[in-house]
Image (cartoon, rainbow, N blue to C red):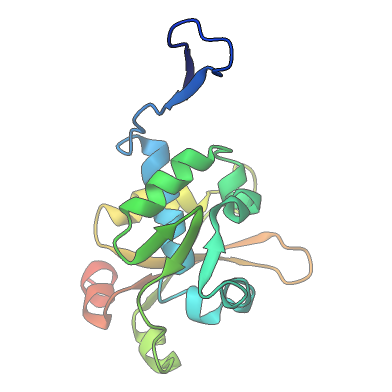
Length: 184
């Protein structure tokens, strides 16, 4: 962002006018796509209905969550500290409303959660390396999203040690999509 001070004629009692020029934000970069995917996940049907903390934050402010709060999320803060970039990305997501530095999910939360239906849409992929370098969720997403749209990816970890167990749970939009891509 660039700040320009404009002084109109020399007048003793007139303060200079400050004009803030915002540079356009490029939402086509790999970073923007990565952040958008993560933000869509936070507000999506897979995460948001089960995320009690986020829904409690939204309930404090008529459904809105301050955008700067997302800069404290580990997966966001390791990629950016730019509030303007996050705001622009939030504005580009059609299911969200952005007002005065806050964001709100517009879509109602689904009435029920059917674990059986979720199970039918989920594929478990095994055989990922357990030692360094451990495959990241972003790498798995990049690899798999070229074949079909993904709803979520979860790396299975040991509950006590938090070490990756070499298995990945991938959820697709429908059982047909899951079967078509990975059971042939």
